[in-house]
Amino acid sequence: MSVSRRKFLGWLSAAGVGTLVGTSARAAGNKHFTGYPGSFGVLHDTTRCIGCRLCEKACNTVNELPDSDPSFDDLNVLEQSRRTDAAHYTVVNRLAPVREGGKPLYVKKQCNHCLEPACASACFVKAFKKDPSGAVSYDASLCVGCRYCMIACPFNIPAYEYDEPLTPRVMKCTLCQPRIEKGKLPGCVEICPGEALTFGKRDDLIDMARQRIRKYPGRYVDHVYGEHEMGGTSWLYLSPAPFEKLGMREDLGVKPAPELTAGALAAVPVIVGLWPVLLTGVYAMARRRDRIAAKELADAVAANQAAADEALAVKMEEMRTKAAKEKEAAIQREVKKALAEAEEARKAAEEAAVAASDADAEPEASDKEEDK
Ligand code: SF4
Ligand code: SF4
Ligand code: SF4
Image (cartoon, rainbow, N blue to C red; front, side, top):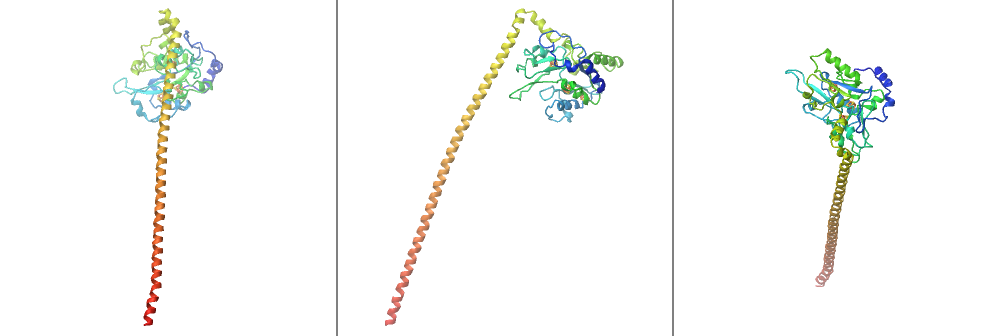
């Protein structure tokens, strides 16, 4: 962080961000837009980045995104080239050193908050718009889930909440607009220990970047990435090597996305007229496909439920039959036992009777002996 809070708040009041933010932006749709004066941005000086991933952690914290797995302290993930996703608005990638024996390079990726965003020009319900603060904001309540923004973005940034079954959203860096409105710095800028990230007015950041290039010509290539790419972006970069070596596209040209779209379509006027119809048609097809998928899912669930009910009924019947058999066997055991006990009692009674009759007969014999 290299901007004092006082200076920052001064900017806010001077720029009137509190009132500017939320006013209707001209950037949405296919209209040419040259940028809001005094809007904000961030300069990422890759020569100062140490790859600590603290910015990633802070981003998830301030945006209430889930914890990372593996954790943000695990720097082994820097071995892989990663892209942003629904749970990570920003990622830091490690690249090979520019010179042999030199230090590796680290580059932070996130939405670049284009001055004329391709995502906004592709979005026919205007869920994306460029705000006066500099942020390209997204309104989930307008989004119909067509995902044209994901196809349109030249930086491959917007991600979709595929795991969210009911209300999936397109997810990307917000430039921490809610924090900016409260006079706070973006979470990643605030935490960055090496001042690899500087928040400020875009024009001032461009001046700062040029000054650094002038002062340290051996340290930087003479190029501020984002100053002109795709019509300019609010996120700007300095690098010690050509940007393509940092995995950044240098083939984008300087024309903004809406201008490119309009130019291409103007060559085929019929298509220009049909474009909204085509988009709506594609959208309708996507919706129909989703409806069919939803019906198939519902049918599959119902079929599974019926099969489960049937299996349960069979099981219950088996259990009932088994219980009945066990009960019958238990009754028979009890009857058998009772009969056996009765038989034993009968035998005992018989034996007792025999013993009693023998006892009666014995005195008669002794009487006869005495008569003799
Ligand atoms: S980087 Fe992509 S998602 Fe971000 S504003 Fe530009 S086009 Fe839109
Ligand atoms: S500006 Fe905010 S949302 Fe964007 S990467 Fe930084 S912390 Fe994340
Ligand atoms: S916090 Fe700063 S130094 Fe650390 S990885 Fe992020 S940009 Fe680089």
